[in-house]
Length: 550
Image 1: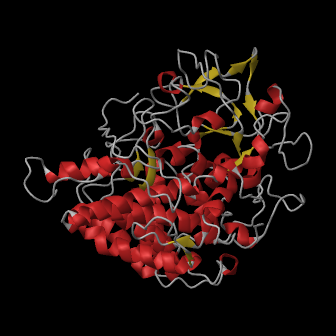
Image 2: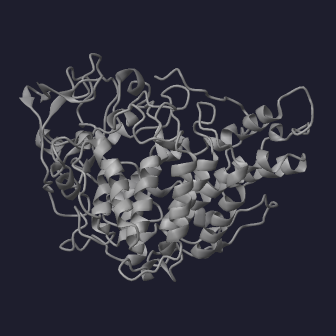
Image 3: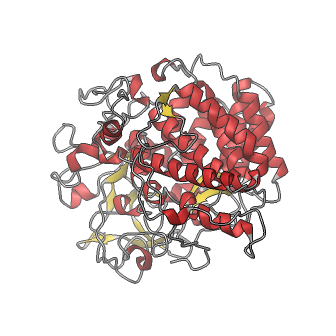
């Protein structure tokens, strides 16, 4: 467990807001003093207390369910069932097959996001009424923009929740392109009002650079977000009018913050995602901080770790203490993504985030493999690249024995220690949302799409590759090379679905999303998820997304 993080514990929002129209807010959240005037208390401390719950509102959602939707819908992971175990009414398999349902638990976080927006709006209204400055209000607007982006990116048309509404009033869903423009306008308006200092005090909070990074992400996907409909976007012919704007925003981060962000910064790739990561990682622009005790909810290792790891010593995490909590082992790497990692240079440190073939225990300090084989029931463990279904149906069931547990490569990117995991399966790894490496590769992509400054694009890609120990490119990168580079660099960080749609690969075949299976779906309208049933019930005037049952 990390002890070097600053956590603000305030009981400002006792009531959990569960939907667009639920506006019950604890009266204690209201200001009794004007925070911009002298009251003996630093006004920025009052704002920080007010904002604490808004900053970290989605820690639980991002720590599990959001990840399931993003990772399983991409070619990174598939979900396995073990003789019915972990099938869980199909919620995981449905995402992997692009056959999502409105009742899937892996998608039931829409109201979490809208309640976060409502909290931000309440803060904005309170601060505005008390005469707070624009600078004080800007962080709440940044968080609101980010939360709205999540809805727009994942579900298409979204409500423009730009104010606190009265009881009984509802927000209508607005066209995706309109929401994208509103987010861009918000970010442009507030970016320079946000703190441009990157330090432990601003860690996990919106800064100028967080707003710029989100703006760059918005611009690189502009053609996706502004298409006539989600199924009309065609990566081969789409014209993105915001490519130069994306480059300009990336340049602001690269050049204006060159002393603040660094893809290297003395931290190797593996340790960026370790349990003790934190403000010292200069590659991080914006993160969701976690602590197994103080801010629980991050549970990425639970479904990624060998199913029967509980109690095993030695184990492939190299811990001397046993794990006392069970593991799922039901999210494994697809054969297609596994092949990408197998093809990496032997010197590329990123190949070590995936366990494939003969499995060796790791050194918990270096996070690198030792020469000690990982054993299970007296036999060495070998994770197979290929996955064989017990019965070829939509359960993605592989059986429930030692052989079943060894099907598929496993991610070990989110390394764990027993002291954390034994606390309710929680972890202390902070989750990066925007990284400097992403800024470099987005700029390179925009340059290649424009056909300009290709030598610079090569240098940007090589900055990432050389840091990781990969062989540098010797010629200008193609879009496909950048797509492949992103697959490795941002593996298991919730960006793959977003990338696959933009590059035109979301309807590709990858296990078990194969055309030979009639239970796998290739409907282009499924590039967005269905609106969850709970949200439809809260907003009866809303229509389900096209391609899904109402």
